[in-house]
Length: 357
Image 1 (cartoon, rainbow, N blue to C red):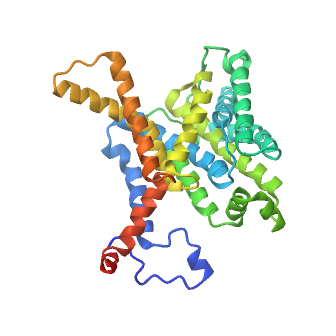
Image 2: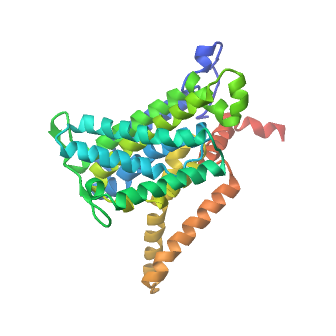
Image 3: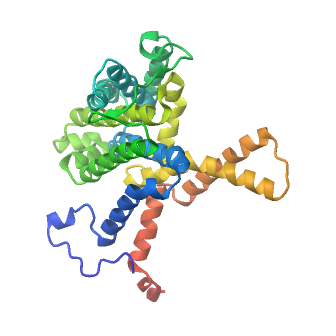
């Protein structure tokens, strides 16, 4: 069938540590990559700009959070705060005439510095105590953004983003915005795929499972926790800057509130902690399903000739969407990534597994 290991032999460490151990995985990835490149030519601009573009941005951000929460095991409830740091730093740098290529790096590095402060909290506390600490830092950042006109313009104000320009060319089209975000999401995905098979990736997993045991084995948990928070924050900072530059076009404190941190964490949990493809699934579910359910409810009410008031219309999609998340986690507590893995593993032995019954 589609997934088969027939003729594939992993006889050495190099072969066994390949990113794609099954040829079908590689072929499917190449197909999806080519489909992503062709998306602007086959998807209407409305759907490309309102669905595909934010999906890719938030997937890159979710992958960054998955690094520190899913792999390093550090519960982070202040992720939107470091995204805000990157967004505002990049915008201010661009407004001062810094090329956008460097402005994005400045945003990522500034977020890494702030994100490293979260790591120092992780050295003292863990679990729910770490979650409360990062949540407190999120509230501090919210207060700073709302009471610092020099940074954000103040409460209920917004900061206009300069026109995005890369390699000296201004980008103003939906297609251009899409390819910039698509490229960033691909880069983050490649980084995460390679990280899984490196010593750094294994060290992060060791810290997650039992940091004391990892320390006995020579893994410096202090170093790897800081590195995890700094790397995750860099991804968050660049993602936040691109979110403002290509989608919102202006930055406001409400875009990076505590509810956004919880939403990104929900994307990672629903997708599956430590799962790369799960982040894609989780973001799609959290970000896109409410709008699809809303459109379905409107279409059904119009088709049946029913009059649905605005208040009911606002609550039905959220109820259906919440119930869908509960059902998915009841079916597979490890998330959509694990559910996909179960289906994939089943296809690898089907139909031969039927003979043992």
